[in-house]
Image (cartoon, rainbow, N blue to C red):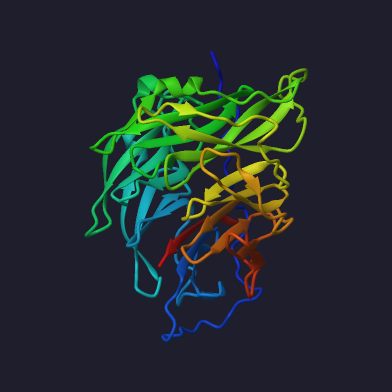
Length: 386
């Protein structure tokens, strides 16, 4: 029987502070923000208003109370998984970006016995109506995804199910990326030195139904003497998504890498079945070390890759091979990144205690005014575009 090897979590251990490059806490009523940016740290939830040029201004009364290990937003509310792996909290988002806790739900009680936990990945469907959370189930071995309905008037969450325990698996160890038509959701992870891509069909009532055949999805053949381990997925605006592929040695059974990670692209059929034309010769290599996070731009044309050695952006071309765009935007270790709708890419580094902002278009990339900002031990970032 396969056993779970690794769930990639970022845990903060230091008190959160915000000191370097901090603009004055003032509001310019003449210019509407491009986005609100939220960073969870041990010191609370840091909230910023992003100007059109990417410069950040702290929201009044930030940081807000809360110890969160994962966040999601739907325009009106921010949802966060509590640090104790028990509760999910709902916060209203005010017109100026300020947060106010309005509800909470004990998600752990919907598992059973003593092993159940709510793990950090939180994600919403494209309507913002259904929230999903990765859950470590009561059998102390397998993971599944819990479903919560969002009350759009109050922000309150109502539990309405979990992906089938019959199909639960230690392979499920990441959040899922949902296709543009809201019908399918995919993730990628490797455990026991085996690559896996896993998919779910999203039913009309919001349930996630595991597509067991996705475990047999094609994995590109690596160069001789190697094979690929998979991690993370990011969907575009049609029916494609990217997956990172780390080449490892056959001889060492996956313990030794044989080159930098590469990026594959997959196409989703109407049945949810996957296909790829990616090969080791047409997949671009990344320069950011071990991949930690993938995030597709709202256009579906740019793919951000965060890793242990920095941040990089690629052109995403649907079913055609992904192509290189930028070099390392920073060489600082990056844990997570998010886009807004105004060509800004935001990224956090737990080890460096930094929040970076870049302006990225299909033809140029530069660091935004005031970036980077210092935040003590940032855990997660989420962006609410305006």
